[in-house]
Length: 452
Image (tube, rainbow, N blue to C red):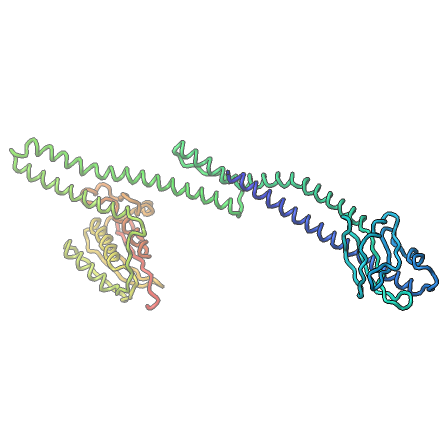
């Protein structure tokens, strides 16, 4: 069953059931109040009869006396202690009540009884009868009028219930259509996306704060995210293909040259082997960086521990100096203890120092300073710098400022993108400040621990 029909069915059944229960409660309450009122009226009438009999002269015949107080639609009788009726009078329309069993009651009694399918208000009150004998005056009065009124009420409530089913069914159908409209729209949009292969969004005619609007709005945000990721994926594949194409072309060219003339010309053999080896190393580095960037954030396996920042930076600087024989100066304002991933912070420092090495021939300066609740590590070079209009794109994959020097520096445009993702996985931040022709300052912002 479709969700729309299910909502329609459940809503209609719920409202109709509620309406029936409500009408049933109304009928039960009204009938109870009406019958109790009728019983109370009969009780009052019986008490007045007892008072009237007690003031009447004893010479008046019993039947004549009772007939004076006889109910319009019922029976009045005197029942002795032995259970026999001393006197009884019955309304013309209630002659069959004379056959109703007579029972003596010592105490006052009033209740609703049923005889031959008809309900009666029955009241029994103790009374002193002839000769000072204790007897029971019993008045029985028909409730037919009350029953007729209740029958009319039942018919009205049933009619109202049946008539109310029509708007209930229509309103439940409208409600089901209203609730499922965004879902239906989402299904149609998904179908169009599946058929056309294009990302589409659900139209939102008016802004609201209900869950249906939020669901449609979330779907649109998801479509935007998918579209951006799809575009990035396409760009990534295109750039990766372009980056791999160059070294593969070089390797193929030198391999063909070796195949044709490598044996006759030893100097050509050495040149070709060196070029092939160099391009193979470039492809290896590119592949490693691509694999690192393809990992999800939860797969970085960050291991946090308390680390002294200054010794860690000193160790990384010394290793970098020995590896590239470059001058690196370290300036420490204050040593701090951080809770971070030591290995990944070292990798982050290496990436930024290596980036400074590629685009600067001068000495590299590393500064450790504090700013509010952050420890800041700055890697400062005096290289070519970055134009202001390109700073916003510097962390994009495969983006390079100095494209003409790519072959010389060996860069792929992946280092800063990788650094950004490592920093985010650690809970840190990477920022760049640069002026074209003057140099670049790369900053690692690390949050301080509470113990600092």
